[in-house]
Image 1: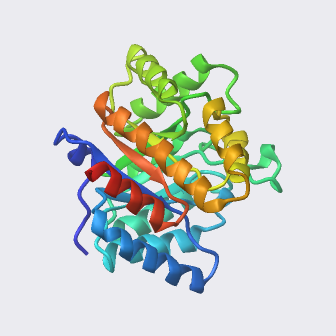
Image 2: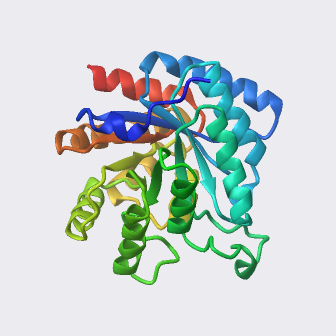
Length: 292
């Protein structure tokens, strides 16, 4: 199978990249629905798409299935996520090898979140305690792999300080990561401060802002609590005023995200990554707004 082009080469072309994130469905019906969503999104021609990996490897087979479908059937450049949680080094290497054999040359290398039912002490096997361990393992296995890693503009919830979190991120880049994709944020000033801290620390790879169009106030509060992100009071006020009107909430969320993306691109961001929750409408609407 024809190998994908490394995403690092796309960044080298010096134009903003647009990427989308999917999560694997639980059943075959969900896979078919995702196929239809992804087909609709072909029209906006994202530079690449990513596929998440459930906590503790819970979607291991589905991640592989969806990644293969998006690449072979729809022609996307695909970046599957791969995490260390509850996996041995041999298991991580085997999963990466399976992707590699399918022509995939881009992987999002992550430590991963610990599942609630798994004791933290049992979550990580020897040699895979940190994200940088995953990066080093995969680069040692296939030096031509392009690896993305995650960054937390407002600090990883488990990190003792911003400085410690930044040191961990630098370690991932030094181990071989080609770019950073940030966790979601809703205030661009948060991203700019994070980018400046990264540059001051010697992290020179592209730092891609992750943007999520709000679809529900309850849902986005749950997400931000999990990842340690903040919600601007102005956005919360607007969403609360919309009440139980999902169409109005979605319109507010898309308008906010559109303003974020326009400003990010104007300020030199290397592109943007959309957390679309497997829904085509918000991504298509944003693409239309940015084309105007």
